Image 1: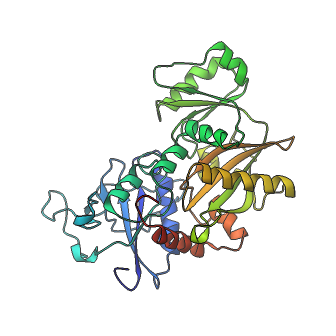
Image 2: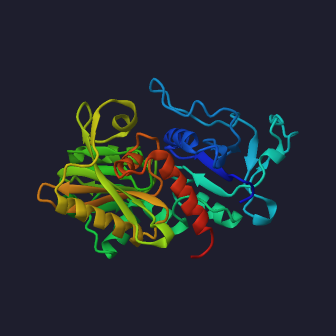
Image 3: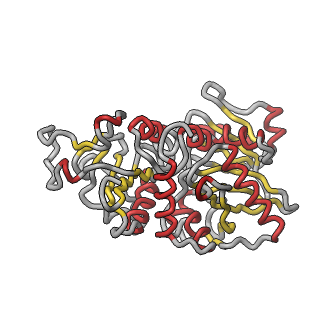
Length: 373
């Protein structure tokens, strides 16, 4: 360690549509890191991609439906060189126009032992920041470049899952230049379908289509987020989630108790407002499923974690049909991380409370290091 305590840089915000949720997740993590063990450095990324040292992290919560945000004037500008010889994080020169020299000064930044990139979505959860951290030689929480990129792209998540024998529901991909689905594909998928940006999360850009006349508008809505669109057949059944942690000392991945999400009021599906703004969902942790189905979901969650070469943590989401069939929905390599988010809730149900969960992830990242492994 560079000092008696472990220096943790918690990176949040980012350029994706999930900027605000990343900020909320970071608020929980910053509060959970025990100051007796960890020296915490908050690092914000504004929507335009600028890195800053926030002067105040108190607003990192949703209050009266108002979403938190990192802006370029949230604090002094930072830069992370992709060169391990130049140190981890540097303040921009104090005489840069519009930048005020911070009281903490450059020496206050010191070294960084490990990074917790609590970034959701593109330009953060998709391997881009992970690649930068690898170049900088900085250990970090979560999956590496390949797993982050593959899990972020719903098409390649499904492809890798199928190669590993994990069942998925019917789907089709609309790449840039392909405007809509042809007749045979519509017949194969049936109605309803869910139209989604292929590389996004927090339900941004998703539409439920129950009439093919509405498909083009739904595709346009998704393409406002991502030019690559995935269209998935609607699955009648229950939505369940499973948290996975990298096994200690490189052992077998561990699966949490399951959670079930039920939308009970005012929403056709588990959209952004239902997730974060409205009191319209109920959660069962653990999910009320039979022992055999629970074991099957946990087995497939661990298999998905390994098939995508995940590290650290993941939340793996499934559908369970009325017949008991388990189908993979998606894999999140950096799931929502507020104390009330599903991933921490599931591990709390296993006896691993939020602060201990956060600490375990930091120690796992330190032990793993960077580079090929």
